[in-house]
Amino acid sequence: MTIVILCRGNCSLSECISTYMVAMAAGDLLVILINVMIYYVFSYHFPHSFLSHTPVCKFIIYMTVITFELSVWFTVSFTFDRFVIICCPKFKRIYCTKRTAVMVMMIFSTMIFTKNIPVLFAYEPELIINNFQWGCLANLVYFSSPFGVACSWFHSVWCIWFTFTLIILFNSLTVRQILVTSRARRALRSHNNKNQSDSEMENRRKSIILLFTVSGSFLLLCLTANVSFVITRMTNTTYYRADHASPAYLTTETGAMLKHLSSSTNTCIYTATQRKFREELKKVLKYPWALIARLSKMLQH
Image 1 (cartoon, rainbow, N blue to C red):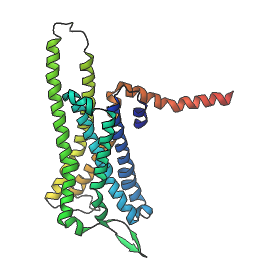
Image 2 (image 1 turned 180 degrees about the horizontal axis):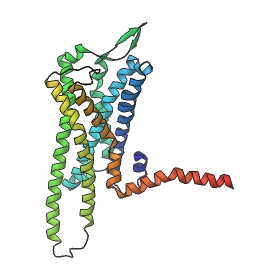
Image 3 (image 1 turned 180 degrees about the vertical axis):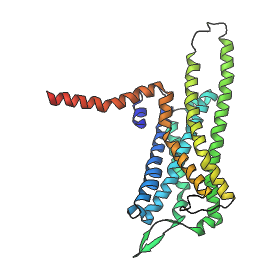
């Protein structure tokens, strides 16, 4: 629904920011479908379906890593675009275009798909029945090898801590620039009517509210999973999924739940912060009922 609303282009947003928001919505949708529905729900409740075939299972795990990284880096790209808009007025004419946004999305997608190819070799069949491979079991040789350990830590640094650092950095610089600009504009407008509205500052305020709520919710919801990953790796803590009382299990699963929840918050954020989006959302929600009413009238006649 969010993708449809944004693609219609009636939310008074530039083509550039709409492209990033559509990309984030698409990435979040993939996380919900693949990571949550297929991996956590269908694979668990239907253990003897085709999803348990080892090649399919490996591909699902591969896609769970990719979809979440896409969602993360699309959020970083959106944050950087807002930073350029406010802090780099000369560069924004070149960078903040729909064409550049599409290119950025394509480059990140290609890099992420390529970077995670080793995930396909990190798991082995759990069972082999009549020469048929079932299930996916972590390959201890791979994960204990220097290459496997390096890939695991690189994933944490690349997808988690590096993105956290970038988002915090860009947001801090953006806030600093807004404060400096606000003081300058107030000084220039001090001799004018104080009740006169400043449309430019109002637009910037709305843009910043959108930026901070999107990036802030992402940081908060992913923090538990990131801290849990580092602690379990540094302490070499292991647990079995059946051991539901294990602190490592509880922390890891809670972090995973919150991390995936971050893919469901952006639509609520758009609804809360964007008046035009709320209006378009109402139209979309009313459309099926209006269509049913028209069909009823046609049938009556």
